[in-house]
Amino acid sequence: MILPPRPEGETREGLLGLHERVEGFWRRTREALWEAVRCRPGCDGCCRQVLRLRPVEAGHLVEGLSSLGPQEVALLRRALDAPLTRCPLLHSGICLLYEYRPLLCRTHGLLLLRREGGTAVLHHCPENFGNLTGRSVPGALVLDEGRLAAVADALDARYRREVGWTGGRVGIDELLRGALGA
Image (cartoon, rainbow, N blue to C red; front, side, top):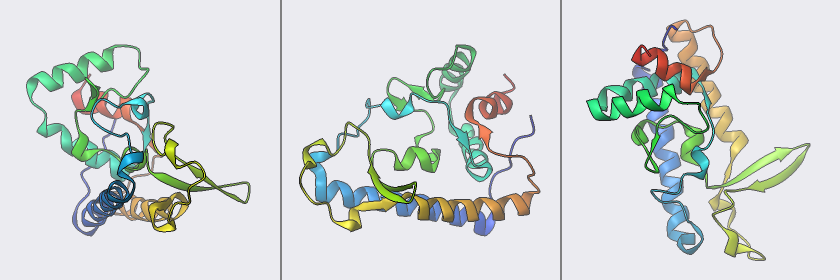
């Protein structure tokens, strides 16, 4: 497998800036609705899937592999050798590459506005916001998933042009296997 290269220059800055904005959104949500947020280390229900990543995020994730020690690499190799029912980066309820995780992981758990069949629908992790029934939530604490995706897709398109990437999204398992030579 040909690995997506590390994002560079303005594309890298754009991706890291987008990550920072999402993290800021999380901070504001936790401050305002702290009693309704259950996300914490060990809460890993959102990691029980195998993702397909935008190439720009795949390149960023591969960059993070160099931060892993030999024991973590061994854990990752074992996870990749087993049948995948969860993200291979999940170990003891924590992501091995938490600082490099993609946007889907960063936004899971937030209040997300999605458009389904022309209707705006509010989605969130079932562990979060359960005690908000009947309570209005300020619009500033709802993330418009479509707008976020449009920004991320534009960033990914720029990355694809810069590096000449012609493929589609990359499965996290195949990406990690390719990067580790597994």
